[in-house]
Structure formats: structure tokens, C-alpha cells
Length: 233
Image (tube, rainbow, N blue to C red):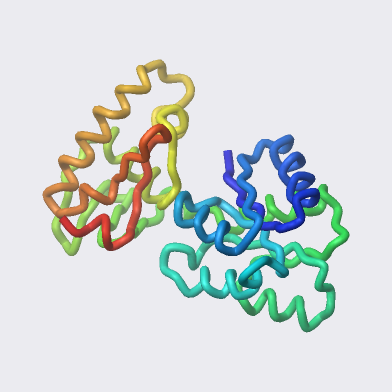
């Protein structure tokens, strides 16, 4: 389930978007200001942001530009949804880093189609491509994980788990989501078994001082982070 952050200060519009997105199978969070939007992004990185231009405190364009300039959010998909319909406004929004630009009034069906299109374009690289997050490099082709040339020995399950986390960094995944995506929905194991594999993965990553990249989010699940604070041990 993709997580969408709707940044809109008009509650009626925000609720309309939220209802339609939820009916389409998305998980939705609403923020009514730039400050709240930044808080939500810092808390859990969404899969996509629907961003209004005119917001209390800071404009959506400034916020998009800020996200594009930060390592953690530079690839965050952003769709601007605004009443500003002049050509110059559209250019400014796209130049600030928006992946798409929709003007109000808008069709909810078109918004959903645009969201799906942006998410398809922003999908993770092919499963056989090498993935690099922070200091860790994972190569599915050779089934090797390393940091600065030092190889990390992993079992097959821990390798699959790390691969999934590295291709979805900064996002919180519940135990049930990890069970479906890493083990498959046809496998019947206790969700707590995932904790055992996470523990083994951390123990293996400890050899290269990367164990703290795997964070436990209390009451929610696990995420892999590349922030420098997680690497200082």
C-alpha cells in the first residue's frame, strides 16, 4: 500500500482527496501547513506528496525546492495541486522540483491517474540492479553486500530482507508487510519470527558498523535509514 501525504490547508479539498485516495487503496496523511508537512516527512517518508502552492508560513514551491535539496528527500515524488494556472506558475512549480502540476478545479480521477503514473516512473530500479544506501552496497547479481570493500556475510533470508529495505529506504514497514513482501503471502510463519531475522541482520551489519541503519519504530515496524545519526555508534 503506497503512502501519500496530502498537503492542503483547505480542509474540504483535503478531505475530498483523502477519501478518493483511500477508496483507491492508498494510505493517506493530511497536513494543513508547510510546518506540519515537514514534520510528517521527517517522521515517515511518504511514497508521494500532493502539494498545494499557497500554504500558511511557507509556500509549496519553497517546500518542494527544500526537499529537492536534501539527500533524504531529493527523490521524493511531488505533485503540485494548485489554483495557480498561469504558464509562469507551472514553470516555477516544475523548476522547483515537482514531478507533475495539476490546476484547480480538478478531476479526482485525473489526480489518481497522475499519482499512479508518477509512482510508476519513480519505482525502484530493477531487481537485478545494484542498490546503494548510505555506505552499504548490495548487488543482487552476485548476492554480495559490502561497505567500503568489506563484505557482509548474510543468510538468504537476511539478504532478501535487506534488499527489500534498501529498495524502500526511510519507509516504515510493519511486520505483516515485511512478511508479504519478503517471505510471500503463501508462507505461514509467525510475525514475531521477523524479529529474529532482523536481529540476525543487525548482528551481521554490526561488523561494518551499520547495524543502527535498521531502526525499530515502536508500535509500527522497521525501517532502514541512511541518516548520519544512525551510523554513529
